[in-house]
Image 1 (spheres, rainbow, N blue to C red):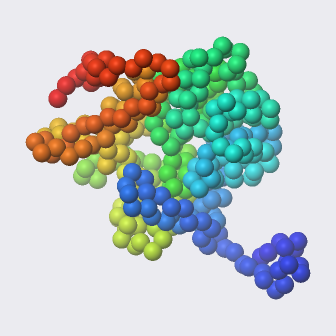
Image 2: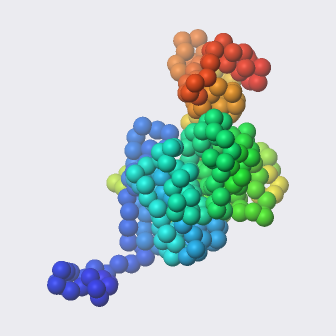
Image 3: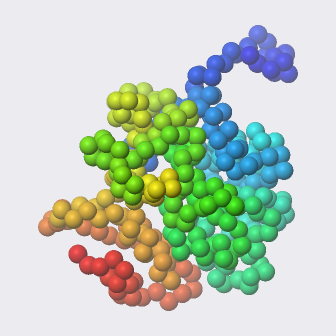
Length: 340
């Protein structure tokens, strides 16, 4: 029912009875496709997700986070905003992620943690390369959370060395209600290159036959848990395709699980290039491109080819004020990826 302070003259007789299973939110997502779908999430699902984040990141009333990601995404809605507020903590919301202001605001408001995406981390690394050490310290932060896209091993290591803050890699999706994998906080083991352990979920990797994959065998991720979406808004067929016959949800990701239970993402099922029968994971190409010294951001994509069916193309954003020679990058890729 409506709280007493909202049931007075402003809302005469307009009390609303809510139930845990009632829909609380429709968040639109397209993943790696161009067909946005409305994800239905209930009150109980949001509450369960908040509980997972509070426990995983030891959030309390002492925590202050800065929310720099767009609020129309579930990641900042659930992880940064709701989880912090429900812990009694404080959320600082600037106008956006402005590199020149970010570090100053972290210090000004004594932030204790922040959630970023890899593109933001790469920008901070470029800033650190051109700035004396004392101007890019992030004292006071317990951790930086990285998700929403893969973060290269080299970038994570360099960020931790430059800013003296642990990076916690995590992974989630709107359909899952936000985070489903995360590395733990120190002093527990965090594996660089891994998206971590299942949090609040049962998770498994299955092969093309639908059988459980062996340790270190690449297959499709499936999830089972309390925060999974109710379904897609007015799209029963798309909802049906997301779930197995026994109720597990497909994430669309290819991965393997090691003997310690940590998950490593190989790529999206839709992000595999079939070049004349040879399968190429775009994530592997991206991970090499981003290690080239002059590259700030990079993405490989599939393009149509009359001979091979599909061919590979790559786009890069060059770091400011550096000399970039395309042939050097091509040579670098040949050395680290080979040729086909």
